[in-house]
Length: 235
Image 1 (cartoon, rainbow, N blue to C red):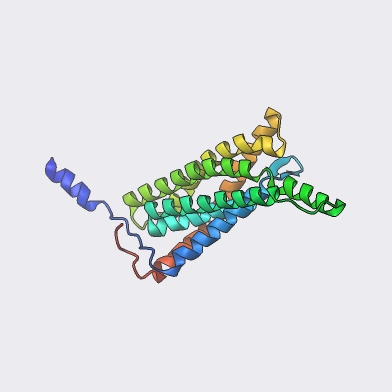
Image 2 (cartoon, one colour):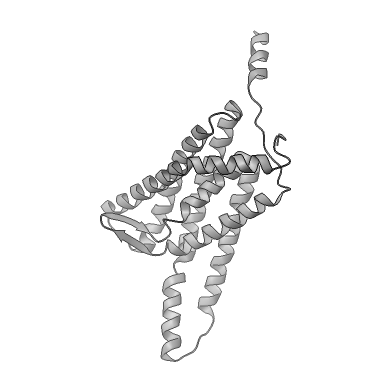
């Protein structure tokens, strides 16, 4: 029995990852942080496209998840988690800056008052959006990364498309449900049918975008793996 168990253990593929010594990780981390900050600003605006209810950050946010998939696959769960936490620390810092900007005294003329009102309207809700985004992205992206890396531990370099798609479905659902529950009231959603619309549209849209980008995501992952000198080191 021990022989069978040992044979099973030996036959399981060993997942390969890269260290973060090259510039690629830093570039992806910077892009993820910028995408997250911009999507938080955009999410403070409710958007209606016919029967669809969403927010102004809808076209940006899936990019953060795609970057998370790339980092998880190439660098592993610990590094991806570091990128998630760093991105949100920068997002919280941006929110603090918005609060200071709003609090600073402006010009007292009509133009200055109009500018102040516009800035308060645009940036004032962002801290609540960031709170919702923080909780949602931390939960959703962490689950997404964990599932992807766990599946890689079982399959090695094979079935990348399955890892990307499976992890995306679970991660996006958790993320969307948490975020919409907090952001709905901020952007003016007050009734349950509209809330359900907001959640379903967000989940289906984000998941569809990730599915459509699977070939591109896989191509980017392949290119980075080839160019990362340390890829193949177990971390």
